[in-house]
Length: 143
Image 1: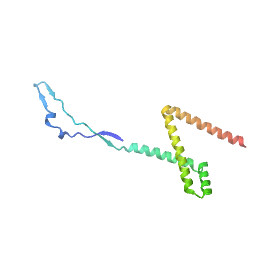
Image 2: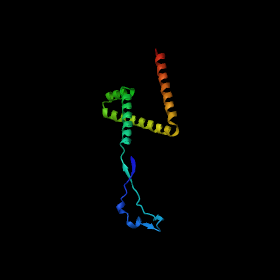
Image 3: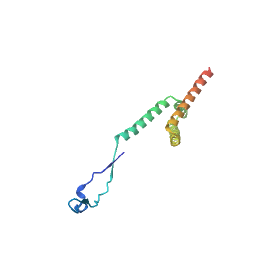
Image 4: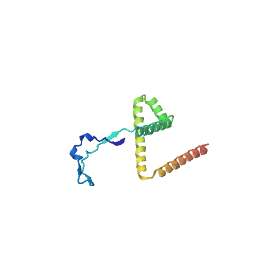
């Protein structure tokens, strides 16, 4: 949202409020003028809305693609088939995903308030590298 000032309406200022006082031909001074208070006008900024939409879209696509075919989706599929109550399974799995996402967002917000973005970025990179190495190690040692 962009904060902008409203245009002044000069016609509403009386002549006495803007009155000039001439003391002599070389000394010109103005009496204090009473200026009406300027009220801010709130204007929607398309750039701010776009950035929110970009963040939402990026998050949605990333999580959607990451969740396709993972263990959670396969578990949900099996539970739905076994229970014969697909809507109950849907509500339960949706509540679980919302809860884990909420925990991730809250933890991320807490970390962001305490650490610099550079530290968070490096830590995330190191954690992903460690997880990748553990997965490769598991693959090589299982054969």
